[in-house]
Length: 77
Image 1: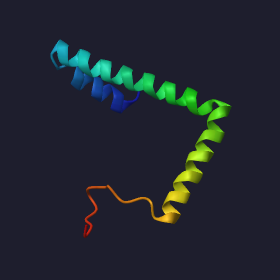
Image 2: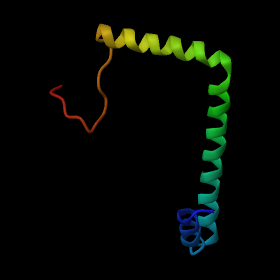
Image 3: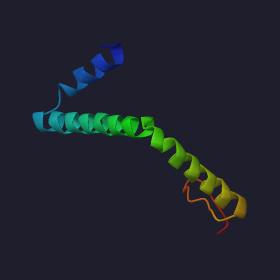
Image 4: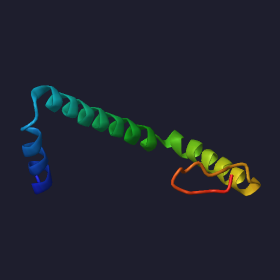
């Protein structure tokens, strides 16, 4: 285990059991989600789907059918 993980676990160990459990569940959920994404993206069928979605996105951008919804960027809308 590396130093950062040791430090995080030491800090977590000071929390009440319920909080430790909640954080552990969040971590395990994230690992499971990452595993699922890795599985989906490694499937050869995903390449054609991702290529099609990328082409659609490029087409939408080229035609001006997209707009910025990033709240950190101020616009004159």
